[in-house]
Length: 244
Ligand code: F6R
Image (tube, rainbow, N blue to C red; front, side):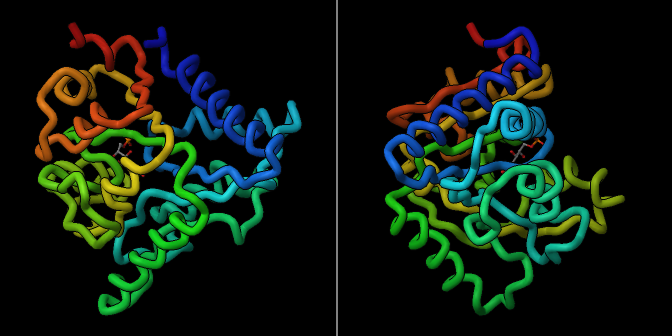
């Protein structure tokens, strides 16, 4: 628990840098699972600073983003492709061919094969070394909404009303907000060697309590992380305020 999200974000960026550098030392790729949304913005800003001012290189990084809205054009300002490019990728030396974000332009009949392929690529690389997560107000991780199973695969999902409501300000209204998304399944998240879930602010305090201290239930997918071998919740004081 950190005093504020700025210091917490720096600490998460440091953990990511450490993972990258450890793998560099071993001459291996570092497989990062990345999240979007407002929560990781400070982490990406700090990673850009570490690249620009402290020579952190991303040349050995292979990244897999958790999710993308569906349908979604990659050049839309609301796409997670745009988000990742603007906040991280174009400011560091990661190789474009090493970045992966679920494709929001697929035709429906191709989604299932595409998702199996996305998982296969992760498996072929030996799995995710470090998975970064935010958390939805309903406890979703990625877009694994309430009801998602612990062994759920990467797939097309219907977004909860609360998730769409939270996103609707970015889309200029609920009617313009996508109803579906492609998300990495809970299984691949649970298979990541390490997981860091971040949450900032009072608004996340109830769901953080439920996830950390409540029962493990698919109603709160983040609660599955209680059973992960190396999961850390990085919180600011407000998000942690309801923990006993
Ligand atoms: C985004 C993602 C979501 C967000 C969550 C929190 O890639 O997977 O689970 O992490 O909706 O969003 P923010 O950070 O905007 O509160």
